[in-house]
Amino acid sequence: MADSRLIAALDLVRRMPPARIEQTLEELVDLVPDLTDDLLNTIDQPLQLAKDAQGNAYLNCDYNRDGDSYRSPWTNAYDPPIDDGVVPPANLRQLEVAANDLFNSYREMYYEGGASSVYFWELDGAADGFAACVLFKKTVEAAKKGLNAGFWDAIHVVEVRPQGGGEAHYKLTSTIMLSLDTDHSTKSSVPGAAALKLSGSMTRQAEEKQPFKSASDHLKNVGKMLEEMENRMRDSLQTVYFGRTKTTVNKIYRMGGASTDKMKMDLAAELQKQLGGK
Image 1 (cartoon, rainbow, N blue to C red):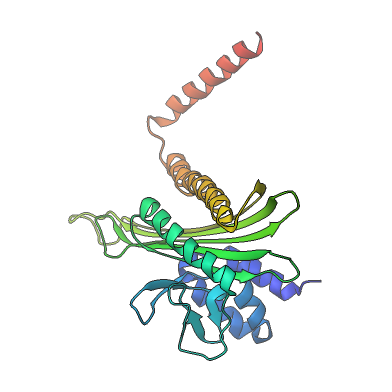
Image 2 (cartoon, helix red, strand yellow):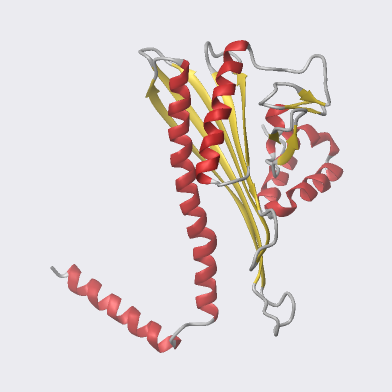
């Protein structure tokens, strides 16, 4: 049975803005130090950007960490260097290299900037099975008109388990963390009067069975699942955050007044009544 303190901590983190998740995690570790490992392994943190010895940008997370060192997916080397760092076996490393090239092209097409990284590892107790983590990060590099800061972090973890009959079972868990800091103040207004900070996270899962003939087919199947998942989650985020923000503003100040809203509601009720009678 899970520790009630861990459940409470995870519930608290779920309600906190991603922009301060690292601070929240540090405070939780101070409160319950004996749960440090569980908290670090369970809570998704904003992705950190690093560069390897060849100048390649890559993203750090728990899936490329060994102790205090992180492995670059481009060079397969740890920084700081360690002698016994965990690396994928040769067959998975070959697939990892191909996946990084593939999703780097995906990043250029969909994100038009930012950084991406893909990490592979073996699954315990699963013959020929493996898991991978696909990461994307896009940050507002410089303040723009109306947008002071912001980031989009996407963390996709997929398990691939080959089945009989030339099929494989794919289980995808995706988390997107979004943070925006906007300010539409004008020269004549009070600085910060039109500031808006918006942040949140969303996690979704999907499972599919897809045919495959070679290892490269796994990348095609995972890529298709990931693309569909990101599109669905983007639509959901737009509806949840921006749609609800608009609804809240409309409740505070109604364009056209309450009488116009009543006329619309009466018309909708009458139409529903007429359609229901046919």
